[in-house]
Image (cartoon, rainbow over all chains, first blue to last red; front, side, top):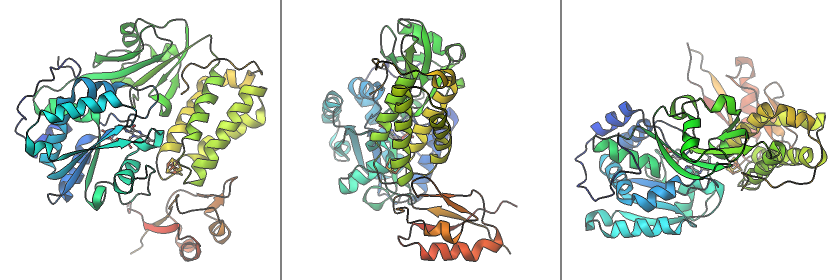
Length: 373
Length: 72
Ligand SMILES: Cc1cc2nc3c(=O)[nH]c(=O)nc-3n(C[C@H](O)[C@H](O)[C@H](O)COP(=O)(O)O)c2cc1C
Ligand code: SF4
């Protein structure tokens, strides 16, 4: 079995590729690993159809998800593999620029990419430039990345135009996550990695990144991380845009087949922590990370965070619970980007999985929270 | 040949003036903060003129009519 992390990061000659690589990507079933899970081949076709030798490839290494570590790990340990993916994209999509958009706090990742790039040939080096993604959650959203690269402002803009129509410099643009591109490189070499790359967080003995074969259950992956440190109350699958799940449902689920992995973060909430406080803390974070451009996102997420905090701090209230339910439905789909959708997906799962806790919550001393940023 | 249209909003431009909900309450209501919530689906034929009026009158040009892909 090929693995992403265990692949030697030697500089292999770039595989000869042409448009057929898009069919291979399609057949591999590869979907984006930045969170949205969009089929990669469809994105490539959209850019290929429009590129006139001027397309732009944006490598999304913003990794703004607070608990995620996998993109940094790949950039630090497999920079050449990732560069291969980007150069393959540039060749197939006839791009004239590659932009490495790396989180401004991810300094060792940037250093590693710089070093690797220095070992490449001049024609390849000439294609690439670096940009530092501001350390804000929304800066990693693809329209925010494009806005930043064009105008230095890392807030999303309205679609259409979509990146494949008019992105960086107004030309067709592919925005692709670091891990997705590394996987493309392996597909081009004929050795696709049939694995899931996940970051274990929260109440687990050895938090961090693990790579597991397709079909591995969540329980098995957690055992690779030494298991839960104490009896778990719930697990957050897919980071802050993901969903809470009951342990008995999540443990036997195959990571890549049964779950929406999103950005790949698996967070374990122990039974000793208060799920309501935890949820309120994460909602507060997501509300504060709104780029405040769209009313329903700015006001809606703030109201949702306020109502969650009221329940956490003053105890349950039927009125607030009703508001949470209603707003969680109303806010969806009403932002220029998917930030509000991610936040209400997360909240709706909390209201389901922690229904009893939310209904019976009593005011208590603020407790330390486990997964909040 | 009948065409079908939907209403779309530029969420960044929209600043919650609320005119659209006044002109077209059949399809647009406002949330707690004054921002429009649009009924899903194609606009019924008889409401198209009013929808066009709402689009034309939006003070920040945030509202638009868009051709929906015809289903049948
Ligand atoms: C609020 C928000 C934040 C995001 N942050 C990131 C990020 O940090 N890194 C990333 O790769 N994708 C992020 N995304 C997803 C990107 O918009 C985009 O879908 C992705 O980079 C495309 O690459 P992929 O198809 O390979 O996943 C974010 C999306 C949203 C809505
Ligand atoms: S939906 Fe929220 S985060 Fe996205 S652009 Fe609008 S205000 Fe910003």
